[in-house]
Image 1 (spheres, helix red, strand yellow):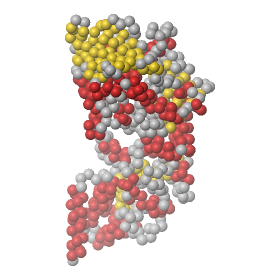
Image 2 (image 1 turned 90 degrees about the vertical axis):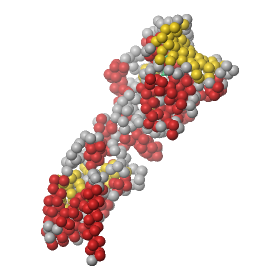
Image 3 (image 1 turned 60 degrees about the vertical axis):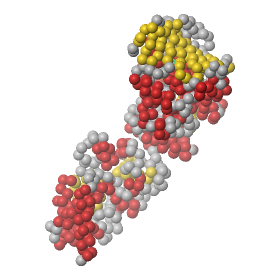
Image 4 (image 1 turned 45 degrees about the vertical axis):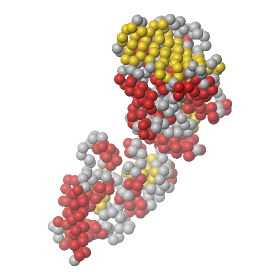
Length: 628
Ligand code: ADP
């Protein structure tokens, strides 16, 4: 901090990132100035909650100011706005730490998201604003100068003042009351926020469920109800939806909710929600859910905003509130974490939430699809981390397949149910998109035989599915591996080359490709393509390989086996050429071309110059013949 003293008023300069934030807030959020009110009320409510907490834990008497509350006073004529709370207040040091720097990760996250979303192009949407608390500084959208008077227990009162342009001042003042009072004159174009009915409607919209009374010009405006404490039958859908929007700061309604009231080994009540969409950036980023979770209340006091210990990581996108009487109030984070009560609550919640998903799947399949689309990739992580519930999670899995339409799903149970009686394995293929997968030559055999193949389009699948190994005693197998059982596949190859004819082709293929492949073998899976590449029995899934390569984790990709289709005209022609003159260079040109063509289809051909040059040679040869 850099302080300049001038009588008892000290001037400070904001840190650079602070200036950047202020700038962004004023220039990017201007379309939703009303959220300043939500932010100020939420800060006041946090400060009040801290007082409530210490009253209960330290057996302190009622706060000096009596009822814990938030008071808003407006003056339309003067365009003045005052919001006051009798919460903890701030000392001078806290003022500097809290209102002088961007300390909060949420704010930084907001900055980041703004950058990524290019708000100047897209126009900043309600969703983005909703997901981050942008904090106290949003007040500079509606005013040019703010005065904060505050006093915390054991410190003298302070007045903080800033016009949000690089500096702020702090001076000591006489103030007896604990708490914080924030006052400012509204800009002309923000005059509406001095109108009672307008402010009331904003409070109802964003802050109706704040846990302390809010008085607007002496009239109580919010309805505090701990909805999760009410019997399920009393819950009104509309109110529940509003409550969800309030706690999750989502602009959309929830997809579904679950009310729980448990009595027994542990006692707790919960109101849990599934959002309709996954919040931005939250899903694929590793550890993104690490610090999320429902709110934890103990005996009517909020203990943690995002209590991660309530749920395993793969379920932490579930929003809501959990309240229990079974934890002591003055618990530290570590105690919460290690408490057997917590472990029990977590275990029960997990079971109930999975049962909730199951019942959605059964009773409201449309909702389930929407849920699965948004959160399936996260829930799948549980397969590798939650072995207690693994079987149930496997039942929740959904896949596209060669039999389903795009965007339609099949379960493993359904797949097995419609397997032919000769089919012993469950087949899958992974890839970037459905269309590309459907043109994979390795599918030809399965097509011809009418065998369903699961299409793994979610990138998470290949990290999860192979670990299932088998389902209902049927092994799960990638059709890109060499060890598939094609026992039933011998018909339809009547016009295939016989052993003596194919052998030289395979041998010359091996000579030509050298150590670029592990082996060259006769194929039983191809119908329309001359060759294909498959992984050896122990090879990695090609998708994983591609990913590792992208992440530069693996340099040398595992060698593949080239399979050659003995029924294909090109292969038959090659066999003919081999009989005539094994040393004809055209044979090798063609073989190289076939091999690289297979690489190209797989998406792993590096550099196409040679491929195209060779193709030109081949076309030249073909057209010469035509001329002759
Ligand atoms: P956030 O509330 O998200 O942390 P803010 O920028 O809104 O970020 O506020 C920064 C900090 O200032 C708060 O975390 C809190 O410590 C303090 N603060 C803000 N308003 C109040 C208030 N009314 N009473 C006590 N402390 C407050």
